[in-house]
Image 1 (cartoon, rainbow, N blue to C red):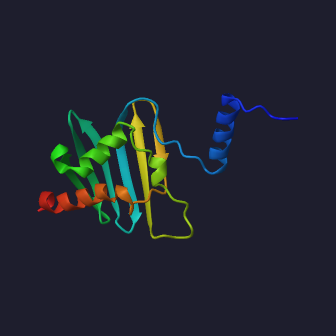
Image 2 (cartoon, rainbow, N blue to C red):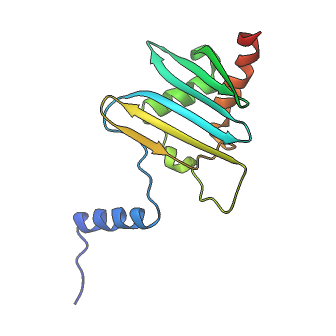
Length: 148
């Protein structure tokens, strides 16, 4: 007997395959209100990002293992970093493509939490050395100027 592949069956197959492979839900329902970036191990840093009109505010609470309380503004003048953050907040970037399957201890673990008004999505095993690295690099470059 031949199986008829309907759109519904194809979608079910894709969802099942995604679940079997440790599928990743990349965005919360609704508009993204904030993002929390946490890297533990090498590059130990914790910061949150919120939208502020046409800019973003970055609040750093941990850097190189030490507590801090530093605010940084990210605007269009900051180029690629701004546009990457904007793509995340506008759901134009699939963060699931920025994850990896751990094979033993790497020494560095990055998690991104995305929050909307009524939902939260946690994305673990972010490739912080990939394209997303420009976000913590921007924060690290801005911190010395703000903490001295």
